[in-house]
Image (cartoon, rainbow, N blue to C red; front, side, top):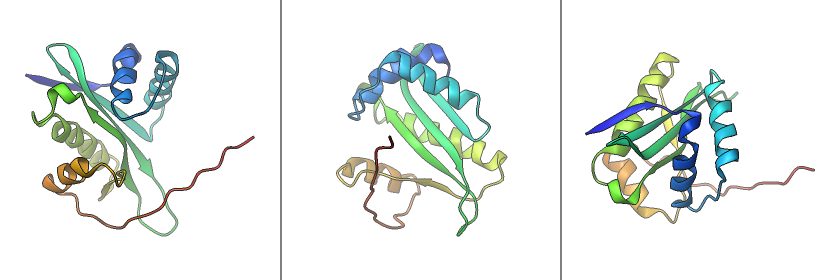
Length: 143
C-alpha cells in the first residue's frame, strides 16, 4: 500500500538517492537544506510516497507568477524509484500537488520534461497532460 505525505528533512537521504536515478547528484546535506527551504515557503510543496515505510518517490511543485499569463503551479521534479514504477505512485503524487494547486486557486498545472525522456512524455500524456510547446533551456552561472 502506498502512503503519500509531506516531505520531511529526515527524507533527505532517500530523496538524494532517488535524484541520482534522474542524473542529479545531490548530497544529503544539500538535499536536507533544500527540503527545509521548501517546507518554509508558502509557494512550494513537496510530497513523498512511502511503500512499506520506504521512500519510493517524491514530487516538488511551486506556485508561479508571470506577467503574461495567469498564475499556475509547475512540477519542479518528480521521481518514482525504478523498482516501484507502474504502481500509479507518480499519478498519486501529482494528485497531491493538484490539490495543493487548487488550494492556491490556480487553474493550471504544468511540467517540463527533458526531450530525451520519452517514457516520461508518455506517462504525462496518459494521465491527462497535453504537450504545449518545445523550448531550449539556457542557463548562466552567476559570480
